[in-house]
Image (tube, rainbow, N blue to C red; front, side):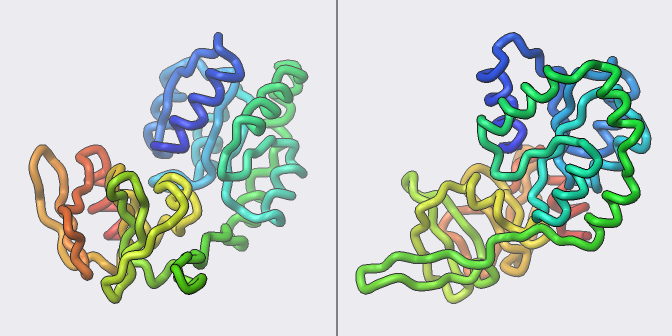
Length: 248
């Protein structure tokens, strides 16, 4: 996952001697790992994982670690994190945030870390998160020779990479160049509506017409409007895409 790789890279740059024990993408695999391994000193934990909220991990494993959340939730929800003395990183993640969070950990003793977890009011935070929704991007500003135009996110059928440039294809079949990379775009989109199928494309669920099996465990996605190249879902994401995202 791009966010995981970015955090891993920043951690290694800030603390070269750091050991990355695991990079996990779901509640289930995180619970299994924590139940069978010694808990690390620090856990960077995204609020929303592929199969649920990360707080289910804390409820089931009670890790003896300093928890640093990464979140796209707005300021009101962040106050709940602060009130519970748990650190957080607001997306998009920057290297300076990682450095600051690790420095904070280094200033606290193991005893204080345990006290933080014991005093963490999980139910209060869950209540806030159930009520509050993260802010997702709503539009893009498109530059054209005669001026600037607004492109609503809901009018984008898919985003794609072509000749090292990123484009948005709208539902009328027009493509628009964007001055952003796909990682930046993906971070700001509603994950219930958009899915990063591979390194080249992000699709809107409302553009999907048909899904077909493809080579080596991949899936072939047919959209309307059609893409000039085949849109495939990589094998590692195929089950998540078909059984959990489309069937949610």
